[in-house]
Image (cartoon, rainbow, N blue to C red):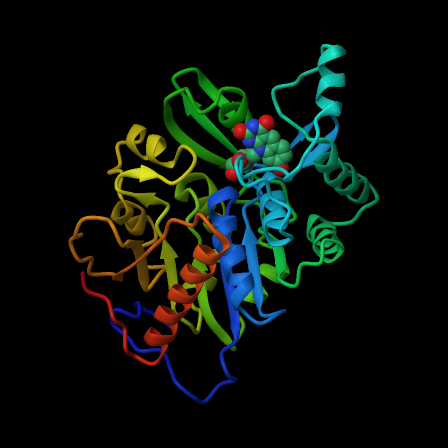
Length: 336
Ligand code: FO1
């Protein structure tokens, strides 16, 4: 399939009833919509492709922060204030670590620690990250498939005014303070998307592909950088939509706005939409944003994108899927 739904109608009838939904996401912000989708998509029909380029080894443990955020969000265990880690967490491990004058810049809560220890143990036994994540999802009672983007190692690093920094060094240790000049996904060109990732995008019963409101630069683009993912996205049989992580020129959470600005890009939803040009059919900007110029490559649509409650997540998931369904039957209803 070529072109976008702005120019084409998706086929109705003929194939299997479209039920499968694929989401692409990073951590905190994206995980909220992934959770909304999990609430409205029938059990087993949702596949969530998660960025793993933030992953790193810390204190001997393998940490996969975005996978953790998605697992905790879908299991109802996420801390509602921090967004990362578990709710009702205790911090004895960190206190003991400090007493030993060990590195304490990356916070690992006592209950959260169990996840990293078990992931590291299984990886050391030879399981792939996909297998480990599938196990963790089952153990936490999650019906959706949480799919690491790859079982190969990909690492985001950033060229800043303080030199090259690994992602967590920049994000957590330096609290996103250095100015970003360039972003690289080391290993992406040699890495393979997991078989499950490609299979999910190639399903012939696909209802929609949803790019969650994650940071485009460091959460979604590592996934898109994997060989074969852009082609699979372009060849999909269902509409693809992305939801803005920027509302009124500000990131809902995290450094997306700061990074866009430092890279000389406009800080707006539409600027994010342009990064996905050719890959999506519609882009959802926030209902409160000022009118935006129409873009030739995609439909611009509006919804309430701020997700403060579980009901907000569900409402946005319904809105996104309704837009996808409308596009599939050739009723694309964009227009600002
Ligand atoms: N983010 C922080 O800002 N500070 C932390 O100490 C921190 C610890 C942490 C531990 C486990 C985990 O799964 C995530 C954690 N995060 C922390 C979040 C995470 O590093 C970032 O939000 C993502 O990498 C960006 O998506």
